[in-house]
Length: 230
Ligand code: CDP
Image 1 (spheres, protein in one colour):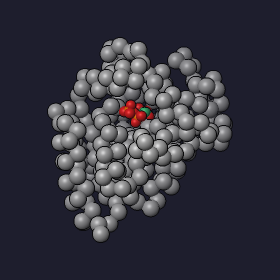
Image 2: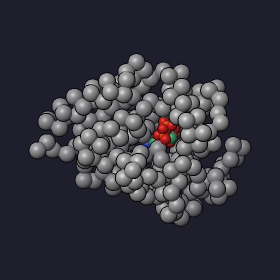
Image 3: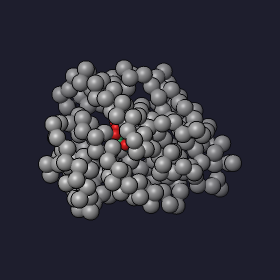
């Protein structure tokens, strides 16, 4: 049998990382972990407890409340992936709004938040057989991952994908607002001091602007097969 490996998928916002990660995890019988969902859940907690809004951030208050934040993934067989639970509540829907997207990168800059989440993520990947997507998976969380991918696509392509996704869910948003959010998050994520979004030296870049889901899946499956046989 092929050995179990760790697959790290990083990249800019809305590059289709989670779609790919879910496909690969389902195909291999691996665990899929959406690390962005964890940053989004902490952001939701911060919003609901008055630590962050579009006009303020109480970093000290949030940091001292971190021990009160319990994050768990519960596998939903119908959805086919682990849904995000914050202090026992399913927050899968709430964390995907543009409101949360507008604040999450500010929360993800806080080193104490990152340290807490990275520790949990490393714990989840201890036994390998995991596909994790995010911004710092190949650089910080699993620097020794056997396969590292770095996903890119043009900002317009990405904003269009996210716009379609949100409107399908019934959210009222404009394309311009989504594009602005995607660009703003890319900027903050790439320029922050702690664990900025950068391509790991040993990551393979995939530009999927012009690839269908199936083409991308086939391409990555080939890379997975190579990595598991090494
Ligand atoms: O799915 P999308 O591309 O919109 O982003 P996400 O994966 O849900 O991540 C949301 C935000 O969380 C990112 O814009 C980053 O600010 C932060 N994040 C991070 O800093 N590190 C990670 N490993 C994952 C997400």
